[in-house]
Length: 162
Length: 162
Image 1: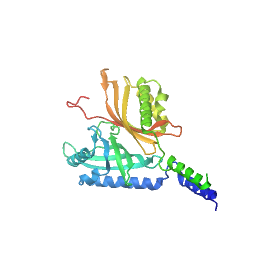
Image 2 (image 1 turned 180 degrees about the horizontal axis):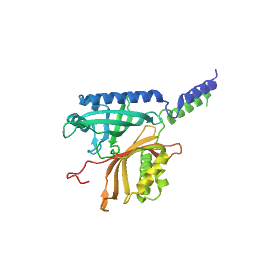
Image 3 (image 1 turned 60 degrees about the vertical axis):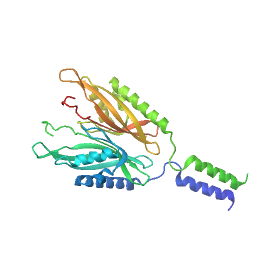
Image 4 (image 1 turned 90 degrees about the horizontal axis):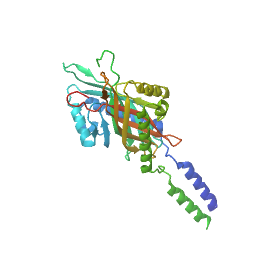
């Protein structure tokens, strides 16, 4: 094989292997992200492990909770989780859907439906449903972590009761 | 120059030009995105051009407005904008900050502070401040468009008046 021919083959291989956006397996990544989010929801739903619950947010994440101050940074996130778990009757569960990715598969966003319950003034469970948007980053260790998290109230049912 | 030496130079150039994440000018893109968002806020603030205001959202965008039904798709977005502009005393302005990007520079998210005003029951302006999170996609035409948009209420001031 002549050097020129060898060079052509190597160049063609490099070109085919892909300059441009790095390929990623969208279906696999969707499943991975939804699975991780579902695990997170289970951990939060148990309402016990503050550190584990907080670990799904990145250290530089921002949480914008409906009607509450914005939460930024790991210490504040930990305190937010601990405070939530300490609310009488607190229970949360959520389900996310249809993540969309950046072309390089490194940033994603998805919607979620939240089911939250706390004890009402008379001690009976008070349902506080919500709609959420989360943004996720695939970190250098290959793990997806939530970098932005915000939720709000659905429309109030007719009659005013939530 | 021998063919082998030529080949080495070409290969080195290809390697330097970058397989892996396509480079992007973060500072320039930040400025571009914030500038586009500021223009959008001005157009919305004027409260007149429904189509222009709606054009900053992608056709497949989702809007999750505090206390209102989720808005999806261009027709629904247009109706949402027209409906907002028709609210007595409606005025909105917002300012976004510190966009963060996917490594390929094609997806971004950022926070915003919203100032919204409507006419209160007695006709005086009622302020409805908010905190927002927006996700933006750089489309094939090089234009940034908002693909997800959600906001909620800040903490209620002591005393209960908003």
